[in-house]
Amino acid sequence: MSSRTKMLTRRAMLAAGTAGLLGVRAKAVVSDASLRVRAAKRGMLYGTCAGSYQLRDGEFADVLAYEANAMVPEYELKRDTLEPRPGVFDFSGADALTDFAHAHGMKMRGHTLVWYAANPPWLEAAVTAAKNEAVFADYIASVMGRYRGRIASWDVVNEAVWPQDGRSDGLRDCCWLRRFGPGYIDSAFDAARRADPSAQLVYNDWGCEGAERWNDDFRKHTLKLLEGMKKRGVPVDAYGMQGHFRAYRPGGTLDASKLKAFLAEIRALGYRLVVSELDVDDDGGPADAKVRDAKVADITARFLAPVMESGICDAILTWGLTDRYLRGKIIPQDMWISLPRKLPLDASLRRKDMWWALAKAFR
Ligand code: XIL
Image (cartoon, rainbow, N blue to C red; front, side, top):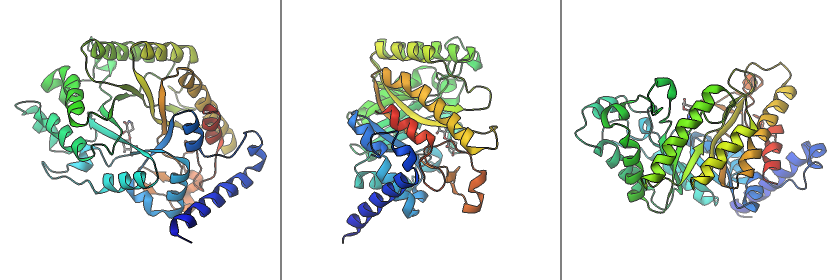
């Protein structure tokens, strides 16, 4: 029996095993089809971020390939990992993840090319001293050029809105803005379109999900940014809505009517939507994991309902598939009990209420 057949069999057994474990729940949903199968039936993608170190965890790699038809590097396409020294690149992690994705029929996302964070220590001074936009335009050309045709969607600019910095345009006061003005955002997308005309170009951010007044302000500034880019003919295809929630801490609220209205504006502007980093942190919740899991699933369901109703969502990616890893580390089994439970599978790769909330969203 070929290794691939073995893997498929193993995966099928795994799925059946999971179904068996959760037999009582399986009745609630027509089948135990994976999230990637359910998403594909809606013409969508379900995926997750991952680190190349995780691919060495065989049982995780099997479940990853079984459940997801999209993947994004959690950190291995960020500039601090890619270009630790000027002009010296390390693509090994991104290559491993991209090869794995293509070997398992998954679409790859790229994250992220221009951001205020995760930059190598040498970059800020280089930006400040930069004579022109080559400091990001050449980087975009090099990185996107390497994966041309192999990475289907890119977070070109990440988290450029931050009204809390007090600017009238609500933009974040970061090194890129200080050196090049607001135009750095347009230029980054122009460079990205030139680098890979086939890629979906995404403006990715968080802050528009919640129900608080600061979220209202965030949505207003985000829509102004996206509307301006559309008017100037800037090549942005989609809004990436990260979807980080907290179930028990302040700032975890969600108002479906505000979300629906916001997504209707995104649609009216002609953008597609990518839910790019969905997770629901259960920190601060009660000791009973069942209660926390149910709350996490409830927030997931209440967020995805307006997302699915918008009719513009191409992909839903969670910011991790299993609770087993934390900040780039494999956590020893005896510590799994203490881990956050903010993702679809628990540390033993069993489907949690959040998994079922995603499954129902794709129904
Ligand atoms: C996070 C990673 O998950 C962490 O491991 C890392 O320490 C910091 O960055 N918005 C983003 C993601 O766009 O890149 C961030 O990922 C989470 C917030």
